[in-house]
Amino acid sequence: MSNLFSGDKLKTDLEVVLPSCKKLVIASAFISKVGFEWMDSLITADRSNVSLIGRLIPSDFLSGASDFVTIKRAVQKGYHVKALLNLHAKIYQIDDDLIFNGSANLTAKGLAIVAESNYEACTRVEGCSESNRFINKLVNAAVPLDILTLERMDLFLEQYRHQEASFIPSSWPEEILPQSSDLFVSDFPLTPPGISTYEYELNPSLPFAQIEVNKGNSFEAAKLFKRSKAYNWIKKQILDNKTDRDLGFGQISRLLHDELADDPAPYRQEIKSLQANLYSYIKQYASDEIEVYMPGRRSEVLRIKID
Image (cartoon, rainbow, N blue to C red; front, side, top):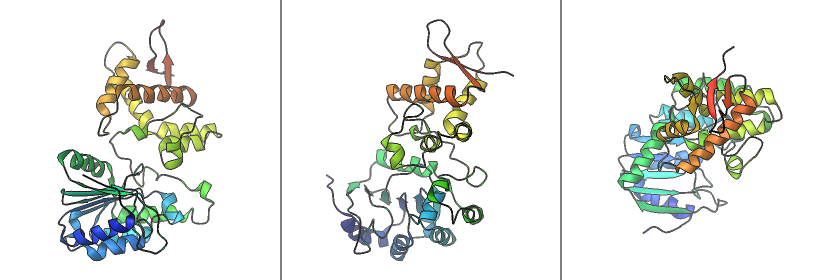
């Protein structure tokens, strides 16, 4: 049985188990200097057996939510450091046997390392095959960082160090940090165009949250949309279609259901809703490339426009 407890107790419990752990996975949207140094002082295992996954987007570094110098130091010390753009989870997995999760980031305030800390809610559960599979998927979906990549990131950040927050990108250019090849629900529009949602406010780095921020500039919004994983995935399905018929709504739904890496998999109705939202975005921002049409009174069908 699990129960709720504070970030202060999480810190105390981790101080007991970290020195003897042989393998560690920490997923934390934010990673600060103080949080990392506290963890590093407790680790006795080979640091190559420790995976640190953070959101690690440009705006997080420039706002101080995560510390760039600390991330670079972690890589230099031999930790496996990875970035996951849409990460919101906070997970501490010890030796596949024990998992702490909740709201506490690997930061001074998240773990109550400082007096004025956040009010966190955490749980402790025993590891099981389903939980470990979920965490493995999360780790595999993240993109590994090395020193060369970090140097490119640092050069990119330098352009924005004195910019207002609204001008700071929420993602890295593809040539600096390629996106994960896995496809998740969070890569798709959660609402139709022009409608925001709480999830976008909670995680403004989500691709369609960024598109909505730029909806006043149709050129920039269209550029962001055409770069999104969701759009490029559906465009590829159309181009790879070898049948003599254009792809209908049901066919795309089945393909999407098989492609999504979320665990547990979303319900089919949720997939259809994501798909319908995506079709609306195509009509608004990519009608020059993909035609969405309805033959007769049947469901909507997609085809590539030929110049």
